Length: 412
Length: 147
Image (cartoon, rainbow over all chains, first blue to last red; front, top):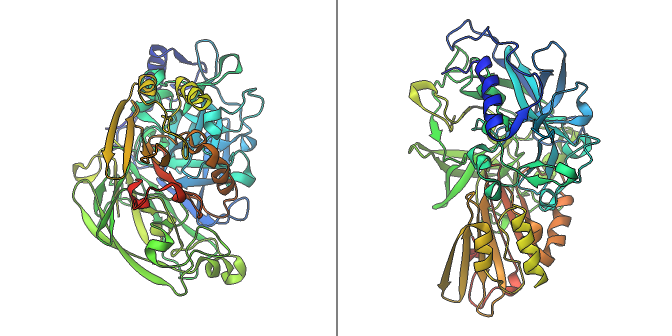
């Protein structure tokens, strides 16, 4: 089922009112009237993506693309390059230093702007206000989408203590983030979902309001949360396909591929021979290795290696120069089995090479590696190396794909 | 006492469940349960016990307690990262140093020394991890029980 732009704008407003939040800006709706159904004339649904060293010239296995944002309902737009394509998160997050537009804030009825802190597994975090923009990629456009402006100046609020309690870096600069932003195109419609609509005393610490400059976590209606822009496209809105070619074992300087919107909606995004693995409600499936099942495993283009197990369990050394990566004396072949909630199960073969050697190959100029591995915390994290030589589909929750499959799911 | 008060304060402010502090003595669970509105389950096992709080936002924190009452391990899972500063207590500085000296890695974070092991993984909506102090493991109890 397609989503109409006009109805989204109304949804934002009505849900916002019901929870005491208002979208102050006159955003959305203005491009309505041209609503189209899923079967309308195909638009260009192919966005170029590239693995390269990124804007800080040091990103290993970073997958980047361009994203155009516009003041809602206007032709006042800018195109950001070097935005990280991340299937492990949801929503567009942009460094404030890269934004030249003045975008409308999403605020409560007292004018307190909605803020967000997203912490990642390594303790690093992004902090900043939620604003609205139209988002354009290829021929696709989503109207008036809540996004995060990372590290916005002059908010006057200290970063909440919970936000820094992961111990990691504030990813508020190009130097720290090593990207200009993050495009989260994971398995969900919103970054938080129903959990963040709960009563404030029970809500996860993700969104904040800061009256009198004191920030406290708050519940947020679904429509005001950060959105996966893909599900708000008028068409090609049930997921994405990431297609990257195979690369040599010692890596490649750059790798170009495609981020294709929709699954089975056009001639270029059919599942073909790909198998569907449905995930649990949290975006995880099961990976089995050596007869042990790891139930919170996942596919994540925003993780830059195969992160699995630990050196002692695998019987291989950690790197001396690059802590946290594996450095076997020679390349090792591994096989693990992925199983979806729907029972689809199949083996995955992958290889782990010596990371110290990989990073030094080709005068240390390679950015893309299909055999980079490191240790993890009791799950398999199928990071960007998994994507090389594959078509990987990311099905969005609640959206119907080919043969009636409903997200969340992966297919490859 | 100071630690307990700090934990309660954090809980009142709506952060992740956090009442156990690694390497310190087990604190009152029942009072925290009221604040969290969560469900507490305590299980006594051979050689150690586990206290588990399941929060309303699906967050689960387990504390692994030695017969002497020391918290030798913690584990977590939930939609957002837990308050590791609270959970790790005096061990937080070591983890923080590891987190901020990350080079090239973009993904889970694992700190493994003779003194402290912390493993933090997952993605938004589904984080998981554990931490333990090897020297505090009860006799004949392997680190694998912390999960």
